Image (cartoon, rainbow, N blue to C red):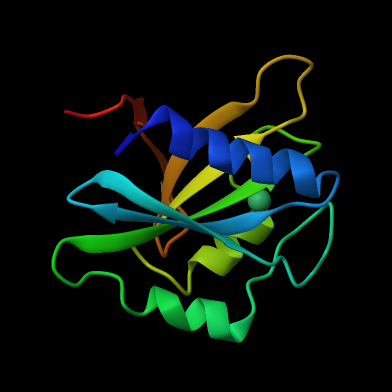
Amino acid sequence: MHIAPDLLQQIVDHARRDAPDECCGFVWLQDDRAAEVVEVENVAHSPFRFEVGPSDLFALAESGEDGRRAIIYHSHTRSEPRPSQTDVNFAANWPGVEWLIVGLAGDGEPEIRNWRIEPDGTVAEVEVQVDAGV
Ligand SMILES: [Zn+2]
């Protein structure tokens, strides 16, 4: 998927603001390009996991119409940006939805990686291309 630098920065800013708790939200894509970042409350308010409230989860149901789809983003403030077992378990409810994870654990720049988590628990990385578009 493609994302413009300013939208990516919005996600990183959200992650830093909510740290040490995990943050979460959606990135809406139009034809594989990020069109909008929607910040969502982590109702768990936890440094170890995130939980999207029911009304926000409802918005995900619109995914898949007219080339528009959502991916879920969240932060890992103390670990690598790879799906945790908790993430994999939760992802079973949302087959085919990609997971963008912002890792803030390192000293330097945040690390951003995107994953597809299959219902059987298989995790595959999906490339993120940061560019401003045409
Ligand atoms: Zn996670």
